[in-house]
Amino acid sequence: MRFEKKYFIANWKLNKTLTESCKFCEQIVDAIHQSHVWIAPSFCNLHALAKKFENIKFGSQSVSRYPQGAYTGEVSAKMLEDVGAKFSLIGHSERRHVFNETNDSTAHQLKEVLQTSMTPVLCIGETLDAKNNGLTKQVLSIQLEEGLKYGSDQAFQLFIAYEPVWAIGTNLAATAEMADEILAWIKMTVSHLNPNISLKLLYGGSVNLDNIDTYLEKKHIDGVLVGGASLDLQTFKKFITK
Ligand code: PGA
Image (cartoon, rainbow, N blue to C red):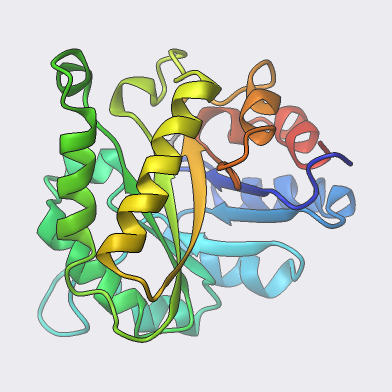
């Protein structure tokens, strides 16, 4: 395996029942050797999956900005940790654009996750409009500055997924060169914002079988965050045995 040190993170979004999720995982467990395979299923399936499949790390697709209280429909970081979640996505583009999450809410979510043993995976990315107006780094800077404003002053591990909004689910992936250049810049920016962070960098947005190697070969890309292509068993199996 060429890419055994890389991270393969599946974001299943609003897909797969518990029965379907178990069936999928049963068919990939034997293919997982050294690679880091992380899956974000729906909240309600996390507990059962985490108990059943020990060599896969399961995490949530989002997390409440609040620790507890009268917040109907919310799931806290502590609750997730308690049912076996090992990581949480924060600020995914669909949370920001469909559910109106802001940079301020991602900051609160990060703060909550850092009070548990889970690894935060902060997702950032610019819209097509911002890109076309040459504002990519400006948008990303604000997402980083705001998102990390409550970050701990203790050392902590953070994953950042660069997911351009225009590349998610569109088949218009960023080139590996562009992703690598942006991630190198993110690394430098984060080290200035908070030197306590130990950082891993991911690319996400229309990753597929034809382009995945180009990302994994890049110096600054530690792994990929995959939506659509992670739902297909044969495709995901090929990813994790790369
Ligand atoms: P995609 O989604 O791979 O379907 O583009 C990526 C994501 O939303 O994380």
